[in-house]
Amino acid sequence: MKKELCSALGLPETAGDAEVIATVKALNAAKSDTGQKAMGVDPAAYAPRADLNAMETRAVEAEKQIAALNAETFKAKAAAAVDGAIKDGKIMPANREEYLALCSSDDGLEKMEKIFAKSPRIVGPDTQAPDSPPPSTEGTPALNAEEAGLAKAMGYTAEEFSKIRGGKK
Image 1 (cartoon, rainbow, N blue to C red):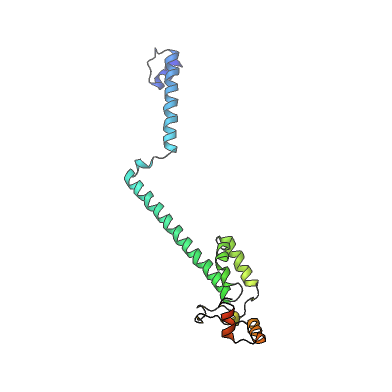
Image 2: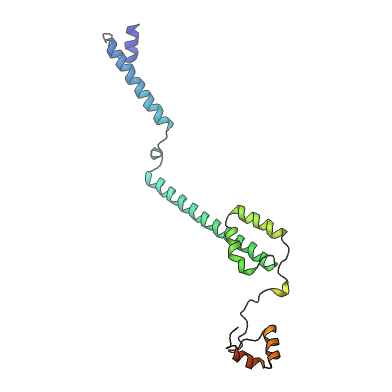
């Protein structure tokens, strides 16, 4: 049997037990190295490394662009939801930034859209704040109803009363 084993291992028939064992160990080590290489495919063996690097760079850049587009689209969707709620009188325009912050995630936007859908109108169409600032009254602000009543009770005109109070409200 030793003759056949030595012949299978490519050793002379006179090889000692130590040589046979060393040859078997060497063959097992080579077999496991080859098995590991076969399991982990080396891409450089199939495509030049420079091409792989270029493709990886393009893929990373494309992913960044897609993420930026998705973020931009999401911001526009959140702004549209909040602006729609303002237009419908469901939230005050002064609170726009806070509502946009609440809509900063998919979950938050979904919850806010549900809230907007269920919310009643809190601001009537006639009470919406104007888009432009009020016209200037050239130095003297107009008197409110209480001030006008006080001026009348004291016997002053609106202009005189404004001068007395120092032109300040």
